[in-house]
Image (cartoon, rainbow, N blue to C red; front, side):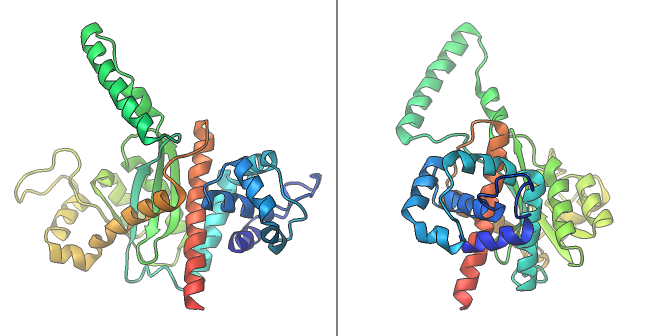
Length: 318
């Protein structure tokens, strides 16, 4: 909670407006939101927890516990894209100053994952599976289309670029729908380059990010060494090279296990570890009811994960 409070104080203004009531600072409210996410509580549950832990509130100077409505409105305000970018900028700046990123020896890794749009029990999943089987049977009989496509369109999706040496997220992208990965390669890479302008970067991604425009963006415009296997679509068989200068270079560079290890591509799986860490530690389900609130929930998970990583590394060094 104290780490989140220090992060917010360095990144955000003290109050949302000079005309606001000034009951709580933005840093104090953000620290409460991080505690809520860390302990997987609802807004009402976070309010009850803070009432039972008054010493936590005293550590960050809270005069009283904010109610659940205040926390909900604070989340809508603090987790907008502008404030999220500021918080991520500060986190990466702290990691650079502490020399924890390790990007000189390990590449950054990019991947995406989907989250559950709501909490479900195993029994509920089993009954839903039985219902889907009955619907499929009815669809074959009546010709009515299934609702699976509508379900996929509403899935919350998170894209991450992480420093593979320390599992810290350096950029994030939030969206809705289980579509292709390659469109959000550009925003992830531009964010990482903006936060690390003077670092020599490598970006390792899976075949979902394979496209010649992505390679040109990374290598010719941003100066990032992209490492993506050219397996998207229908790759040529045998020794034939795929179309495009950089896709052909990728096939030669990633041809053997030894060459993949030398260039650092074998560290790409570290981003899978980060996705697993976030889902195990912070839950794979979101509490938001709308697409925008789910995007805010995913952004809060990423920032909370970064705070946990930084806090853990500080404790292990002391």
